Figure (cartoon, rainbow, N blue to C red):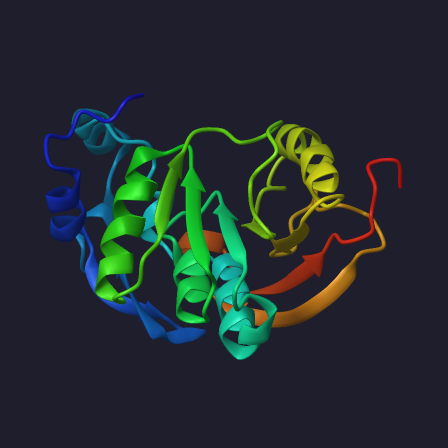
Length: 222
């Protein structure tokens, strides 16, 4: 489904509220809340407006933990080219920009995710470059690739994990997972693990045990 909105930025402003995620209070975001229309949006509403389900309107546990780790360890990204793949609301890319990355780039296949990332970057007075399209199979030009919650089904995990392991041979790769069934069963380095608050509406749980892994030194044959 292609976006048919004449003014996506206006739609985002009208259907979200400016708030911060619980784990990252330093960063303001356009988020869906229980008082904004998009929180209760039906399939018919989304189809009428020509948009995909608004995953970009939430600060998911994985993006919160990546951003928290970056802000608490700015030396890990300072001066580096950081790429946030499947960026959603752009939280991780914004954190990288705030922590001193030489380039903070956000990628998503959903145009609305890039729209909201641009708005959120402006809210936080940082520069985030936007990169549209599906990067799987490409060789991204970055020093650090961060990605979260992409093992939510078997097909996605089977498609994206070999690519991430390939990328890890020439750049640093961090994968954050909130305990999904299809997360990789590899012996990965754990950068941080934490229980992250969420909501029953999003996750059918009040918190998710979320882990940020480093894929450095792991090959596709492991």
